[in-house]
Amino acid sequence: MIVVSVLGLFALFLLGTLLFFNATPKEKRVTKPIQSTYSVTDPEFRRVSGIIAGRQWVDGNHIEILPRGKEVFASMLDDIRGAENSITKETFMFYGDEVADPFAVALAEAAERKVSVHFVMDYIGSAHATNEQLDIMRDAGVNVVRWRKPSWYQIARFNHRTHRKLLVIDGKTAYTGGVNTADPWMPDIDDGGYKDYHLRITGPIVNEIQGAFSENWVSSRGELLVGEQYYPQPDTTGTMLMQVSSSHPREGQKRVRKMLLHAISSASESIRIGSAYFFPDKEFIAALIDAAERNVSITMLMPGDKIDQNYVRRASHTLWGDLLEAGIEIHEYQPAMYHAKLMIVDEYFVTIGSTNFDNRSFRLNDEANVNILDREFALKMSEHFDSDLVSSQRITLQEWQNRPLWHKIHGWLTAKTIGAYL
Image 1 (cartoon, helix red, strand yellow):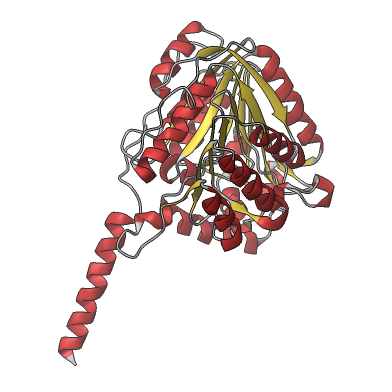
Image 2 (cartoon, rainbow, N blue to C red; image 1 turned 120 degrees about the vertical axis):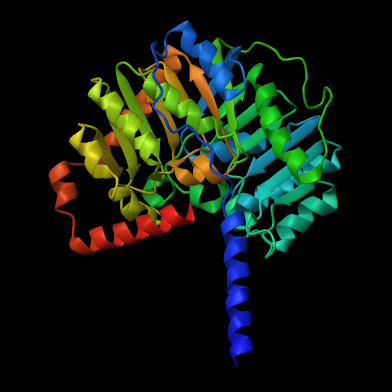
């Protein structure tokens, strides 16, 4: 009996050790305040942010804003059906009769006409993809990867997901933003569809977006995609200055978080943040409060009670006290699940992509954002943001303090659990 108990304790010790060393990547991140001496409109911001992101700014691009899922999917499918050389696609979620079915068929038809098609979907995010959807693509010659299947001896695979949303057609047209290839994004907002933003992008920056996709294609298949079919000579299609920030949890590669902190520290007038989930680290909170104390006007927009993961909302509430006391406005979107991921600084710098303002995105997921330095585009995104505010409820400090006791307890317990997990 004693021997069994000792063996049991030893087994628990081994399991605990395995979980401790494999559940999350090693922690190496910016922990000290960034002291920026320039604004986002200063050429020095552009120079330094190129170093921080590991990718330089690229001029000559054009962006089309797609604010509804129906528009996103229709535009994507049109471009997929017109592809001639290559299609590369990466997404977190892939499922549903309304969305995944037509995408599976369109990608299969592209492969059948000899277009080179590479598709990375996250294993957990695509858990509800049907065998029929997968077989349609594979049988037609689509190179399908279900990324990082969890296994008992590699616990980190449960945590380390690809959350990116990328699509590149012929190396010339790209899509990115917050929209997954899944049914919740199809209905209109009034019918329960998710509120989100996606971008259709052309110009030289598409090569950089293709490079971001290539990171995980190499990671999953050990194959480097090269040649004109993936990286054609880029054409100038507009006047926008853009940059790609791709991030993954390997040491020193948490680039999106570094980029966000740098932009916040460089703000001089205003910051607008829209995020499906808001649960960042204390250093990130401190950066926002510091900006507010510099008289930067900060407005944050997050989901209300229609959020798809209410425990995250409750945990997020535990962080709001200091933000509200600093004068930061916090609003909750009412009509539907708000799933956007964007930040607008001084109505000049915009970042949009797959990255939420939480530690899962900052530390554990593979993410990708595009950054834009353009006054006209920033004003357009500000108009969209402000329009969403009209359908939102502002949370005051008094309302936050007077939220029900069980909300406080639920939030505190959840915050502690999420904090330990992340």
